[in-house]
Length: 596
Image (cartoon, rainbow, N blue to C red; front, side):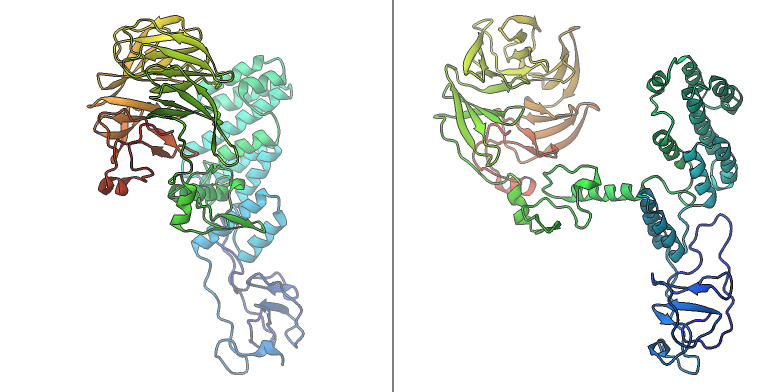
């Protein structure tokens, strides 16, 4: 084997690649020659270039090509000096340094991904040119035997892998998983005796996961394969179940032996999630599926995002990004003739209801293209004004409440604009808050004078809870629990079925209003003189306090915002410029009662 510019036909002895379990790069790398088999067919190539026949008068023993330069001497440009050396033999090409560990890791990750796409010849060529191994040879055999269902051979492969596994208990767990798959496949094939043999003579002697063995023994009673797959929650014999088995087995093997499953996809998914977290105005749905994003550029929510020939170009300007975020007034509605106390979008987002001191509720239609609002219906007759509104789960009905001195509640049919029910239990009542049960057939209402009722669509009283001075209400998705903030600066959960209650949140100041996230995990509280507090209802801990909101006399209603509820929005009684400009994104500088 000759280096570039080296004369003569004598071969140089190359170092042999390392043997055994090591997974370093082997053979030729970045200009290093690889050991051939015979003098007549030895080839060395580097940097992705394939060897070609030498037109010059070179050594008949073999051909060596580096960066397209023939190894043998000749009058052509191949004989030019490339390292500043001189003399009859010329100077050898400078060898690039060996691949770093990170380079080897990247090559293996790419190889694994290509292998998953079925590009096996490409993987072989990549491993050959880089001198790396995708995985340990014993791991490759193990993988093939598992996917082919050759369980005896797979067990023998486990014995070869023992020296490469750090924990001896891992081999037992891996063997248990193998035998479990073997047992289930025997049962599915109707080979009950063989399955029983595996259970008694192979699984049980492992003395591992006895509870699971008892469960497996129960599968012997399954009358047909469908029943077995249903009870075992198993896909059945074939590629799907064996691939899942292999994914579990790979977790016990070091990455130097066998890469974790879909490692490159997981790394890319983590990168996309990090970009989403760093996106200051992120307000789009970003699936974990990599097909929904471009990997060619970083993700930034912006109106400057445009598609040209399938390539995304981004204007990463903060001012442009904020234009996509709701920081600017888009439309001003002037149909109400007095203060607007409350507003609420329908559950499907196609309508907006606004309640005012002028005794009316206006239903607005949302244009799906321009997002502009158009007056649809006006619901009149609320003598005390409208301070709270709640849509039914199917958006067919709307319940309206008044201020503290109002004892009435109005239930409207949104489709027809007709009043279905006007409810009042007593003239001394105060009904200021309402929430719908998820079934859409019941709702709860209450106020600060101690009323707490559950009613049907006709206004009939179904249940009541005495002595609860309600500030705000919310029905959880379980259909049983109602959350209520009261005058004791707390939120309690009330169960109308078994008439039990429990404390969930305790504050040091009055809770004026609250709202719950879509998943029911977080609660956003407007606390008098304290701003906005975010609570985790599951762990019952205060997550964060948001400052800059001024509230004391008026009831302020905040909300979760954004496509993934990553933001919160809140009104305020005033605008404290030095504080709010640091901690918030101000939109309006007047008093705002409600944000949706």
